[in-house]
Length: 534
Image (cartoon, rainbow, N blue to C red; front, side, top):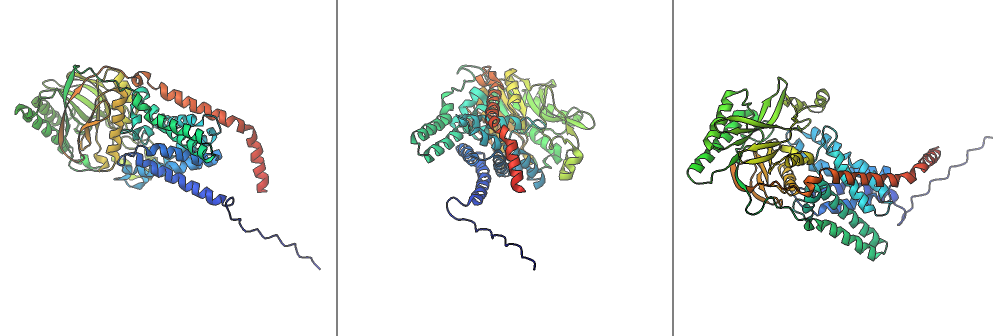
């Protein structure tokens, strides 16, 4: 008689109680990571709650505390998605969700190594310093690779109204990011110390966090010129566009005529004594999408307006570079002489101004074919002589790239000009998010910042980052300002990329030190897990 197989012991019910719900705690931690990323968007325009940035760094540090690198990487990914998906929603406003979500997902991937590394370096002494350095390193990579990188969402760009902004004059955007991240990591250390019943250590960490936030107040922003130094009068022409959206420039002649007419009105106002005569005029990016070097009528319109106002005009235009390429160009147009010096945009935006891997990109969106001619990059720094002023010119998104602005200032730029066109992003927060970048640049280099946009926001920014005047979105308006010219170089301008490099190397060194002890046991852990699965 066959014997029946022994009954398998029935699995015991899941225990309940304080120490049991590990899977539930793990799921909550994943949700908290995504929520932390979403909360970080509140530090950026249109919300501008700058102090939230450090709180979110603290939250991510606490979430990755004690986690394995693999778990830390997952937490970083979820935080990245929670952050970049809402922050970058403007990138899909006219082209649909696919390009937006792809861009957000790619940016979120940079927080994967950050999450893993954060889990590791928290095993080291003085770990808040290393967490801060890792944030700087993550941003350094993200703003450089691939295709030249993408600067949106850097912690520094959430600090335009914060005490930390002053640090930009000492070490640029990387030092501001480091201070924000250090404050957050120290807050996390304070929480851990208080949780461990070490109030003195918690108080010290909290005081350190406060010091990191307030450190910018101790950095004097170098004045651009003495009170009796040279100044120039500038007029910024925001001519307006027929409509917002990707097809704003379908009526290219209309956009050009808007800026020509606005400049002629300015000339009439000067003759009537209603406004002071400017020393120079600035038009925005894409003010003339009709190539004036190939279209005589466009050249005649521009020359007529420039001769009428009687001072040099910096004209934003597109210039043909062969049958399949175009250059995004700022041209100095002088009365009676016509076009002269040019600056060609050095960092065209991939998948927007030129299409890498066009056939592959078309799989995700047919809108890539709206870019009929790829924009080619210039190879000269944007230093232009516009009348009495030497201008540090950058175009649109270039204001987010440290080196492009710094090189133009170090090359002799006395005032920073950002020619931009944000009509393709409608009334989304993109415009305000870009504006705060120039506010940081003003402090970083102790220069007045002049932002001039086709459809807004145009603005005059003081060297301390304050917005002195602005023209709102989808309006036609001309701003007037008397601005100082400066040849003073701040510590940040002189130091260049060295602060960022030093902080990045410090983070990598800490990561290597934290990872080294774990390397010998990794094969043993893998073998143990394999046996457990068998």
